[in-house]
Amino acid sequence: PTPFKLAPSILACDFTRLGQEIEAAASAEYLHIDVMDGLFVPNISFGFPVLEAARRVRDGAGSTQVLDVHLMIDRPERYLEAFVKAGADSLTVHVEATAHLHRCVQTVRELGRRAGVVLNPGTPLEAVRPVLDSVDLVLVMSVNPGFGGQKFLPQTYERVRTVRRWLSEIGSEAELQVDGGVTADNAARLVQAGASVLVAGSSVYGADGAAAGLERLRQAVGQ
Ligand code: DX5
Ligand code: ZN
Image (tube, rainbow, N blue to C red; front, side, top):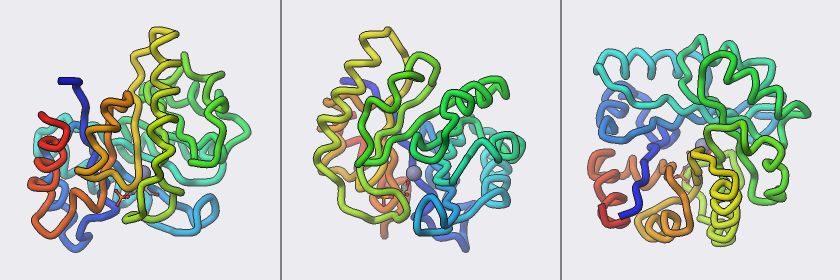
């Protein structure tokens, strides 16, 4: 079986029980943290206090789960250091949100964290090529960012295949992540296309809890 990792998104969790919701997802390799500023995307989610709380929960559980911060904010270069201080292990910036993509990647790495870049569904994949050999993660959005619970866009499969090919061509070991509308119905096909990390919000934090949701996704991919 092709190895892959899961990244439950706390955007879909019950925030009155944040600590328990994070602990329920402890079997996942990543914890996905969606930061929205109301400018880059038409929604506002949460910021530093929630990330700091997630960090305390993770550390308290003695876990090594990667705190994977997806920055849906304008000019993320203004806040990279602050997100590292708040506890991010990995910082992913949108190529559409900055005129200084390479500098962002460089800064995150200088701060000793994993650097990710992310593309909206309408953005040509070529936008990540200049930094492909300098990143630890490429995120291909499979919905327009801003909200959980949206429908998966099927053109994502082909986009994932292309980025996977480019990464192979340069011998990169960067993760290839997909985010938005990921469910047990499309997970296997995404991993086949070359995704190595699946972000999932509503399909994990469903009625029967995160542990069951994560198990469903693993079953669907056959692992
Ligand atoms: C969307 C966020 C996603 C979101 C995914 O803007 O980036 O991470 O939480 O939620 P689902 O899995 O419900 O589409
Ligand atoms: Zn996200």
